[in-house]
Length: 198
Image (cartoon, rainbow, N blue to C red; front, top):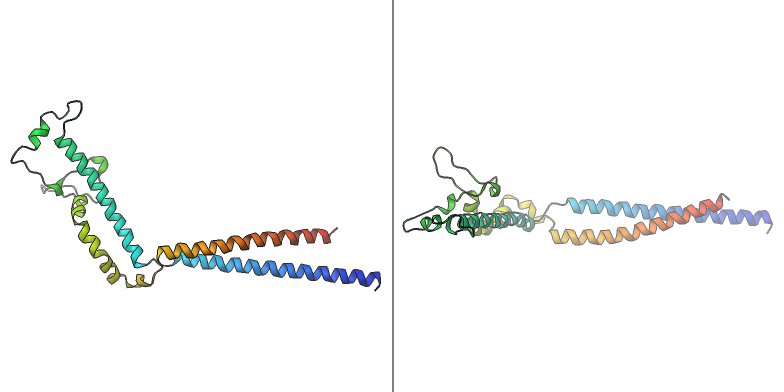
Protein backbone atom coordinates (compact mmCIF):
# COMPACT_ATOMS: atom_id res chain seq x y z
CA UNK A 1 0.00 0.00 0.00
CA UNK A 2 1.37 3.38 -1.02
CA UNK A 3 1.80 6.26 1.39
CA UNK A 4 -1.04 8.05 -0.38
CA UNK A 5 -3.34 5.07 0.04
CA UNK A 6 -2.28 4.72 3.67
CA UNK A 7 -3.03 8.39 4.35
CA UNK A 8 -6.35 8.15 2.52
CA UNK A 9 -7.26 5.09 4.59
CA UNK A 10 -6.32 6.87 7.83
CA UNK A 11 -8.35 9.93 6.84
CA UNK A 12 -11.34 7.74 5.98
CA UNK A 13 -11.10 5.89 9.30
CA UNK A 14 -10.74 9.14 11.18
CA UNK A 15 -13.71 10.62 9.34
CA UNK A 16 -15.78 7.52 10.09
CA UNK A 17 -14.81 7.75 13.77
CA UNK A 18 -15.88 11.40 13.84
CA UNK A 19 -19.19 10.53 12.18
CA UNK A 20 -19.77 7.76 14.72
CA UNK A 21 -18.95 10.14 17.60
CA UNK A 22 -21.34 12.76 16.19
CA UNK A 23 -24.08 10.14 15.79
CA UNK A 24 -23.59 8.90 19.35
CA UNK A 25 -23.59 12.47 20.64
CA UNK A 26 -26.83 13.20 18.78
CA UNK A 27 -28.37 9.98 20.11
CA UNK A 28 -27.48 10.86 23.71
CA UNK A 29 -28.81 14.40 23.21
CA UNK A 30 -32.05 12.92 21.91
CA UNK A 31 -32.37 10.65 24.94
CA UNK A 32 -31.80 13.64 27.22
CA UNK A 33 -34.44 15.68 25.41
CA UNK A 34 -36.95 12.82 25.60
CA UNK A 35 -36.37 12.32 29.32
CA UNK A 36 -36.67 16.07 29.98
CA UNK A 37 -40.02 16.09 28.20
CA UNK A 38 -41.14 13.06 30.19
CA UNK A 39 -40.05 14.77 33.42
CA UNK A 40 -42.04 17.89 32.52
CA UNK A 41 -45.15 15.80 31.89
CA UNK A 42 -44.79 14.07 35.25
CA UNK A 43 -44.32 17.39 37.03
CA UNK A 44 -47.45 18.76 35.35
CA UNK A 45 -49.59 15.65 35.88
CA UNK A 46 -52.76 16.41 37.83
CA UNK A 47 -52.67 15.40 41.50
CA UNK A 48 -54.43 12.39 42.97
CA UNK A 49 -57.50 12.70 45.20
CA UNK A 50 -55.46 11.71 48.26
CA UNK A 51 -53.08 14.63 47.77
CA UNK A 52 -55.91 17.11 47.29
CA UNK A 53 -57.46 15.87 50.54
CA UNK A 54 -54.06 16.33 52.23
CA UNK A 55 -53.92 19.97 51.09
CA UNK A 56 -57.23 20.74 52.75
CA UNK A 57 -56.26 18.72 55.81
CA UNK A 58 -53.17 20.92 56.09
CA UNK A 59 -55.54 23.90 56.11
CA UNK A 60 -57.51 22.36 58.97
CA UNK A 61 -54.27 21.75 60.86
CA UNK A 62 -53.38 25.42 60.39
CA UNK A 63 -56.78 26.42 61.77
CA UNK A 64 -56.23 24.16 64.79
CA UNK A 65 -52.88 25.74 65.54
CA UNK A 66 -54.18 29.26 64.92
CA UNK A 67 -57.23 28.93 67.15
CA UNK A 68 -55.28 27.34 69.98
CA UNK A 69 -52.83 30.23 69.84
CA UNK A 70 -55.73 32.71 69.88
CA UNK A 71 -57.57 30.95 72.70
CA UNK A 72 -54.41 30.58 74.80
CA UNK A 73 -53.87 34.34 74.54
CA UNK A 74 -57.47 35.06 75.52
CA UNK A 75 -57.37 32.64 78.46
CA UNK A 76 -54.13 34.04 79.84
CA UNK A 77 -55.16 37.66 79.29
CA UNK A 78 -58.56 37.14 80.93
CA UNK A 79 -58.02 34.61 83.69
CA UNK A 80 -54.35 34.68 84.67
CA UNK A 81 -52.67 37.47 86.67
CA UNK A 82 -49.46 38.64 85.08
CA UNK A 83 -46.15 38.23 86.86
CA UNK A 84 -45.93 42.01 87.35
CA UNK A 85 -49.39 42.21 88.90
CA UNK A 86 -51.20 43.25 85.72
CA UNK A 87 -54.83 42.16 85.55
CA UNK A 88 -54.96 41.99 89.37
CA UNK A 89 -58.53 41.25 90.42
CA UNK A 90 -59.84 41.14 86.86
CA UNK A 91 -58.94 37.48 86.50
CA UNK A 92 -61.07 36.49 89.49
CA UNK A 93 -63.98 38.67 88.39
CA UNK A 94 -63.85 37.20 84.86
CA UNK A 95 -64.59 33.73 86.24
CA UNK A 96 -67.08 34.62 88.95
CA UNK A 97 -70.25 32.49 89.17
CA UNK A 98 -72.71 33.38 86.49
CA UNK A 99 -70.10 34.76 84.12
CA UNK A 100 -70.28 33.50 80.58
CA UNK A 101 -68.44 33.89 77.31
CA UNK A 102 -69.11 32.53 73.85
CA UNK A 103 -66.13 30.52 72.67
CA UNK A 104 -67.19 31.10 69.05
CA UNK A 105 -67.08 34.84 69.64
CA UNK A 106 -63.55 34.88 71.08
CA UNK A 107 -61.89 37.88 69.50
CA UNK A 108 -58.30 37.15 68.48
CA UNK A 109 -55.60 39.72 69.01
CA UNK A 110 -55.13 42.01 66.01
CA UNK A 111 -51.81 40.38 65.12
CA UNK A 112 -53.40 36.91 65.25
CA UNK A 113 -56.40 37.54 63.03
CA UNK A 114 -56.86 35.52 59.89
CA UNK A 115 -58.74 36.70 56.84
CA UNK A 116 -61.38 34.11 57.70
CA UNK A 117 -62.23 35.85 61.01
CA UNK A 118 -65.53 37.72 60.62
CA UNK A 119 -65.82 40.93 62.60
CA UNK A 120 -69.16 41.97 64.13
CA UNK A 121 -71.42 44.21 62.07
CA UNK A 122 -74.75 45.93 62.74
CA UNK A 123 -74.78 45.00 66.40
CA UNK A 124 -74.55 41.24 65.86
CA UNK A 125 -71.98 39.33 67.94
CA UNK A 126 -68.64 38.67 66.33
CA UNK A 127 -68.27 35.18 64.93
CA UNK A 128 -64.74 33.83 64.92
CA UNK A 129 -64.77 31.46 61.94
CA UNK A 130 -61.41 30.07 63.01
CA UNK A 131 -63.06 28.91 66.24
CA UNK A 132 -66.04 27.49 64.36
CA UNK A 133 -63.83 25.48 62.01
CA UNK A 134 -61.69 24.35 64.97
CA UNK A 135 -64.65 22.63 66.62
CA UNK A 136 -66.03 21.26 63.34
CA UNK A 137 -62.69 20.16 61.87
CA UNK A 138 -63.24 16.46 62.69
CA UNK A 139 -66.50 16.41 60.75
CA UNK A 140 -64.97 18.42 57.92
CA UNK A 141 -61.97 16.07 57.74
CA UNK A 142 -64.31 13.06 57.60
CA UNK A 143 -66.30 14.58 54.73
CA UNK A 144 -63.36 15.81 52.65
CA UNK A 145 -62.42 12.54 50.87
CA UNK A 146 -65.98 11.85 49.74
CA UNK A 147 -66.86 15.35 48.61
CA UNK A 148 -63.57 15.84 46.76
CA UNK A 149 -63.95 12.45 45.06
CA UNK A 150 -67.55 13.24 44.13
CA UNK A 151 -66.95 16.76 42.85
CA UNK A 152 -63.56 16.12 41.24
CA UNK A 153 -63.74 12.52 39.93
CA UNK A 154 -60.89 13.04 37.45
CA UNK A 155 -58.50 13.27 40.39
CA UNK A 156 -59.00 9.53 40.99
CA UNK A 157 -56.73 9.01 37.97
CA UNK A 158 -54.21 11.65 39.05
CA UNK A 159 -50.65 10.94 40.10
CA UNK A 160 -49.92 10.53 43.78
CA UNK A 161 -47.19 12.76 45.19
CA UNK A 162 -45.09 9.78 46.28
CA UNK A 163 -45.28 8.25 42.79
CA UNK A 164 -44.42 11.62 41.23
CA UNK A 165 -41.36 12.03 43.45
CA UNK A 166 -40.18 8.49 42.73
CA UNK A 167 -40.61 8.85 38.96
CA UNK A 168 -38.80 12.21 38.90
CA UNK A 169 -35.96 10.82 41.01
CA UNK A 170 -35.51 7.91 38.57
CA UNK A 171 -35.49 10.26 35.58
CA UNK A 172 -33.06 12.62 37.29
CA UNK A 173 -30.71 9.69 37.88
CA UNK A 174 -30.81 8.75 34.21
CA UNK A 175 -30.41 12.38 33.13
CA UNK A 176 -27.35 12.78 35.32
CA UNK A 177 -25.68 9.76 33.68
CA UNK A 178 -26.61 10.85 30.17
CA UNK A 179 -25.44 14.43 30.69
CA UNK A 180 -22.13 13.15 32.01
CA UNK A 181 -21.82 10.90 28.96
CA UNK A 182 -22.81 13.77 26.66
CA UNK A 183 -20.15 16.03 28.15
CA UNK A 184 -17.48 13.32 27.80
CA UNK A 185 -18.43 12.68 24.16
CA UNK A 186 -18.39 16.39 23.41
CA UNK A 187 -14.92 16.72 24.91
CA UNK A 188 -13.67 13.75 22.87
CA UNK A 189 -15.19 15.15 19.70
CA UNK A 190 -13.67 18.59 20.31
CA UNK A 191 -10.28 17.00 20.93
CA UNK A 192 -10.56 14.99 17.70
CA UNK A 193 -11.47 18.12 15.73
CA UNK A 194 -8.50 19.97 17.16
CA UNK A 195 -6.21 17.07 16.26
CA UNK A 196 -7.55 17.06 12.71
CA UNK A 197 -6.82 20.78 12.31
CA UNK A 198 -3.16 20.47 13.32
